[in-house]
Length: 337
Image 1 (spheres, one colour):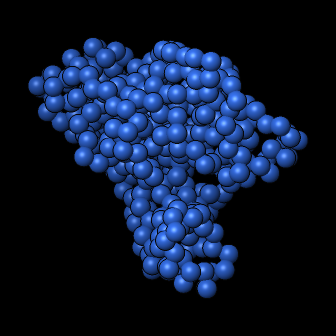
Image 2: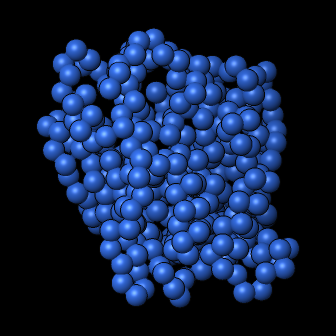
């Protein structure tokens, strides 16, 4: 375990923001993690996973602990279900492909989401009608206070839309070291009626889709809309889709007849933030080295050497403009650091 000084975090965040960490260490075992948490010389610590859900706006005056725990294992199974434990440092998309290659169903709609397994429960990642909570069984986490290993069940995590206990009253108190998933081995429940999955499967001439087909369809859709972070810096969807009252939606619908929505309850609907941002005129708009992606208004991009504060400034401009036009607040999905 080597603690380094003045390390650039550009390779460790998908926005590609070049800031310095005073100190940096990559953790490969739970024992190393427990050990580094006890070091008194570095009172300020920042936990870093895949770096896909953060915007770094300044140099980090702390010890950055990069969670690089690897390994995927089947821990239990029966005729219908398999329980898979994946360590926190596993790349999410590679984990999804591993499951699909083994014909384990449930995560196929979550293909190509950036980030690592360990950060997935924090955000309750989701796409195309499926959320992490739908396949989450439990997770293990280290308490930052005393180094103890704590188990969290699905119910313990208090999952909500892009939300969990780890973003609320447990924020900053635990480091997830592994996640156990409950996936189907046969009779997979397929989700093909969200977004353009059904039409993409039709284009692929697939009439009886498998989980492999759905994954390929999702990958094709995402690649057509979302930039590859290895080519253009981004964190995927920058904003959450807002949930508004049906009363406000009906009022807006009178002026914006094409305004899409997804019912949440009898009194609330979810409105696509991308649609709001596009209507506000930001889709494809560029401001020097940063801007909004041409194919997906939800994605703010770093075209090269943008600073984190530039991207933060643009995000606030978007939020203020959407609020002024629609009286809707859109929240950032990424963590601002």
